[in-house]
Image (cartoon, rainbow, N blue to C red):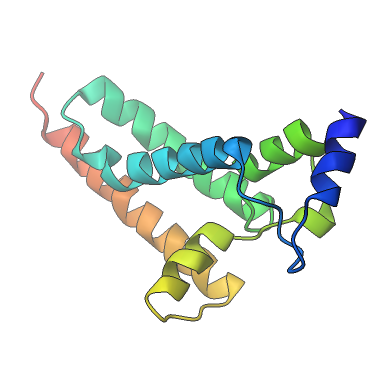
Length: 137
């Protein structure tokens, strides 16, 4: 594990960012999967699946808030790469959403991103609860 971290650190580019490798690709794919599930999960037609979604959504928002705007998936990537749960030097606070917004020309602070994401998750959660109530058993 130490050797991998040394090799990884030596492969950093001049900008300080690590290269885009297969491991980063898979963690990015996991992030995208979670984002798609959070955004579209309220459309599920099963009452049990909506119940699970309604329980999971607050947990996702809570971990986001308690982890300082950093996804737990980033922490797992740090564990795999460096053997440490939280590396302040490698902390990527909301870089996924910041990059997404930057692509369309919107600059947002960490507080603005957190507020927007938690508000969206609240809206999705309310939609899921209402949809679950409308499903006839």
